Length: 358
Image (cartoon, rainbow, N blue to C red; front, side, top):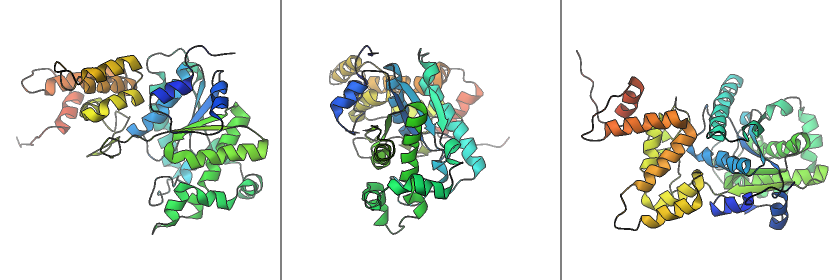
């Protein structure tokens, strides 16, 4: 059955959400003209996701809106190993209890974004945990069934491996094997769920192609990978980090007000790009807004206000946005307002304050 509307590949390109596509792009385009299943993996390294992870979720959202089935993989197994991609030192090992708690937290972050706005395709969102199929896999069986098909020279050529081997820290065998675990996830999801697409950040290219290769060698399967550029600002800084640390998607770790304020302070040079990449605002509206920024009648921070409102609504819902706007209005110089305890606490973190005794 052919899907109506624009091919999701074009949507992603127009929004600067594609860096690389594996295989023949014409074949990929044709496949994506019919309903497909695509997955993005999220390792439970913390009990919440941060703003950088929003790209993976919004990529799933674009597929969802185009009529495809989004699959969110929660890395209960891979999280026990730790992805070396983009890391200069090995990640600390987490306890089983911490991993379980982290999975619960990040699943809620993903679910909230994918279901915000009442999309009709809500019931198509599928969550899987790779620990469910890896926990029964013995080490010997994994070596025989998966390791046998992996060439060490290819594994060594991956950027994530090369950069670590050349570092003072080096790389453990545990981390070196990570790409095989992620590669096997792709093969398993192809067999169990009919998933033949995987998306991830540009730093995941090596892990994704490990999966496409395993699928080809073991099952003769045609699997495809899509990567998107990581979120960086025009000054080269990583987007999603504030002076106080990560910009979390969880209101228990960062209030909707603080989240809104971070986005509101994005520089003019970056705001249009981020509107394209991390909102669902129609592209003609973004183009018109970008053009208006050079007009003498443009009110400063109009674009930032729209960015902050769009993303805060997506992540925290209407109630979270309303709380952020109320706190923002009350905190403005010369403004009066009534704040509840939660809003007052959020605003206080962002203002000079002093504690006095009774």
